[in-house]
Image (tube, rainbow, N blue to C red):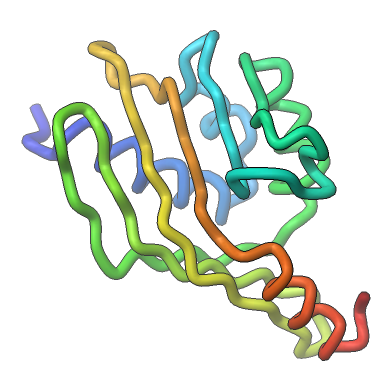
Length: 139
């Protein structure tokens, strides 16, 4: 049995499966009633800023955002508190042709007693990301 904290393991696996493009394994990390906010607050992905609630909405998020991305996710630190893990992340999306955008993020992963994600919140600056896209000539 692993002595890795369940929230750390969920955080590590979420990154691993996202980078591998493994939707089914990524979705399996979530509880049925989970909520995902990436980013927290309003964005074109989530105009009301309420996050994605339940596996059907989280799957839709994957299909419209994660599944279309070519991500590299590096965690420089993970801090455990209770049933949560705060991760300091650097997420790079490679658009091809040498065009890449990088976002510094803080992500909070909360798991239930079964180790399933019940809440994931990614904090990052949408406007800063869009400025990078514009600089690349892609926006």
